[in-house]
Image (cartoon, rainbow, N blue to C red; front, side):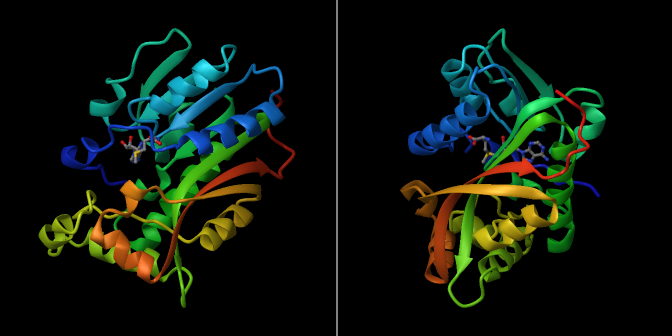
Length: 251
Ligand SMILES: C[S@@+](CC[C@H](N)C(=O)[O-])C[C@H]1O[C@@H](n2cnc3c(N)ncnc32)[C@H](O)[C@@H]1O
């Protein structure tokens, strides 16, 4: 299964930290709850320019982190930090990239919806596979943190996911969809409902705690998203996931 790479024009729009201050505070509280001494290692998958990683490194002066991204344009724009390492590669190849390394926290901040394959089903498999590999790379106390914009249909729960995927992945519709404000026009994007994510996590054996917040105004600006809102609600969800399996390598 191959994953599509985002166009440079789309990458250029990823110029800020998508995690709000309130969400960051909630995530920091989860980290403190599970790693009270503040000594942990993290992998920020699809970490882009490293804004989120830098905040974590500042908040927890004893932690170390790796930022992984498949876009050199973003990765090499990271600020230098002796406690931060940069790795160029795809989230769908985690096991090959890190055959022996283990992490206490694996973050997927607003990244999973960009792991796009040749069809909707293929895309869902890529997302699942990436999460599965991340779970295998955790220490025995490890956690996965997923932040996603969830699109929740009013009548059919995961319908907006299919509609937005169809519209954005169509090459023929790309000029129109781009004009509607989608930076992923012609490539595709796979937002899902909160319930659908929950089912995915259940299926992967990940126990879930969730924090929710309204999607920020800037993510509602595009008319494409507004169309999806009218079909239900758009909510940022932050999932803190604990693998239920016991046979992972010890920390
Ligand atoms: C919306 S940005 C989010 C950036 C950052 N995590 C944040 O929350 O601010 C999505 C990021 O996912 C990265 N990405 C997309 N597909 C990827 C893949 N297959 N492997 C690794 N990173 C990927 C993009 O290059 C980009 O940095």
